[in-house]
Image (cartoon, rainbow, N blue to C red):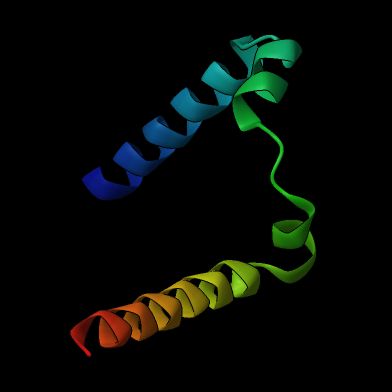
Length: 65
């Protein structure tokens, strides 16, 4: 039973903190994510990391020659 009481206590603390925070502060803290992330999730980010990795591997091979 102690775990459920702790959970309820945690949830109520979070709700009270959320309610006490002014609306402008909540909006400012959340921030705006890029449209690519909103529309496609993490796929564009992962593709860009993959592309950067390929480019860096190619440049290392060219330097080795």
